[in-house]
Length: 272
Ligand SMILES: *[C@@H]1O[C@H](CO)[C@@H](O)[C@H](O)[C@H]1NC(C)=O
Ligand SMILES: *[C@@H]1O[C@H](CO)[C@@H](O)[C@H](O)[C@H]1NC(C)=O
Ligand SMILES: *[C@@H]1O[C@H](CO)[C@@H](O)[C@H](O)[C@H]1NC(C)=O
Ligand SMILES: *[C@@H]1O[C@H](CO)[C@@H](O)[C@H](O)[C@H]1NC(C)=O
Image 1 (cartoon, rainbow, N blue to C red):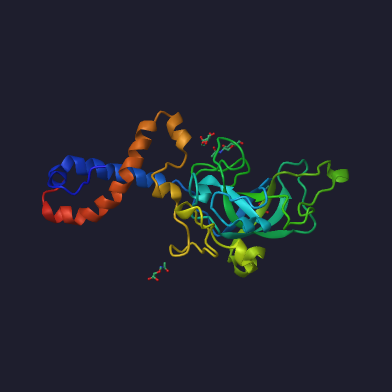
Image 2 (image 1 turned 135 degrees about the vertical axis):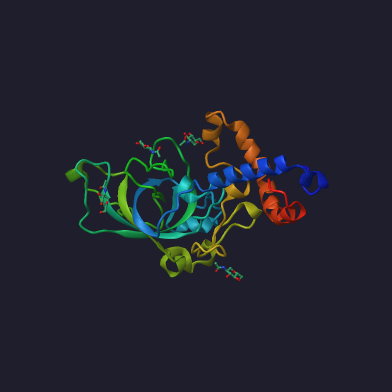
């Protein structure tokens, strides 16, 4: 990309104006991530994560020896690689089954503390489809996809009674969630090998030991940092692939421009 630093850059008001507009559009896209409160109600599903598998965040292989979950994409905060939810720990408490008829309310409310290590991809339907404009089929903006079965979770964690209810696997649960410190709440927090990111994947991984949401200890969004729109295929599908490549190529320029704006203003007192 040509450097925007030359005199011709400053001579074109219109060019600067267009870039500012594009930056605003890109920023609007970045705010499409779901900003969730620290506690509330969510759905919980489960998926198969092979032991020692390095999932989206790039957390260590040993993290799979402890309870982990994938979070729905728009709450995860990135369409690929890592996002701000990577490494965060949540206490999840089973409330009731969502799909069975009648719903099953277990007499004892079991809880588990999970660390988010993976991304549950956005789709049009399904439990990970919430966006800022609408929740999933249960009315929730968060879905935790628990890695289960897991060597760290008893097989009877999900209560079921086939004789009574006709189900051995209730599938989707209504849960309450609460953000908690990974240390000391997550079972893996006592194992140094289970904490942190794998090193051999370099800069494409981010799995803090104990992220709290503070910019200093929490992952940025890989998507935002690389100009990848929240859902690439949606953008392409609605015929906006041109504008999405524009966003990617303009992203680095946005940062530069924001730094240059005060300089530009002092060079050129006339209004845009
Ligand atoms: C997002 O992308 C996936 C493919 O990666 C696609 O199947 C899905 O329908 C898209 N989501 C939405 C909400 O359109
Ligand atoms: C998610 O999928 C359900 C159907 O499973 C649908 O009712 C709901 O509107 C979808 N949510 C979004 C945000 O698209
Ligand atoms: C899920 O649990 C919450 C809190 O107990 C309750 O308000 C809500 O109705 C439940 N939703 C379903 C679908 O069972
Ligand atoms: C992040 O760390 C820097 C340097 O240690 C510190 O000055 C800043 O206050 C921290 N930010 C927050 C939000 O804690």
